[in-house]
Image (cartoon, helix red, strand yellow):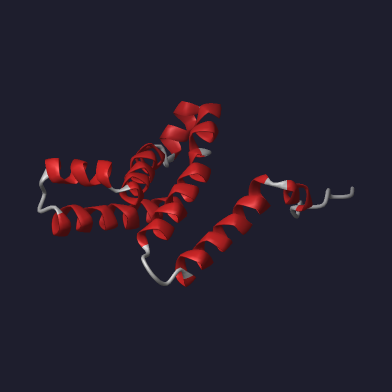
Length: 127
């Protein structure tokens, strides 16, 4: 569910940017995406989230099988794109994006890094 909440938030963020900043003008939007690297990163993260949101239900998990997990590993790239988007967006005070970046890095290192072997596993049941 966290991924779907994230997709909802990013969709709202994108919609507000598209409506308020570009008045639903596709040409203006694409020009902005090409012109500003931080918007390119944010838009790329949004586009990559779409297939994850579409495949986040039990029917798609069954249909895709092992490919589902491979597809959903895109979330690691999306996290990095989102953090970079936020860092490049900010012009003066980098405290908040730095906090997000540190939290994201800690979670990524814990998930895929050398600390993965220290994850808590349930003990086998003695009979």
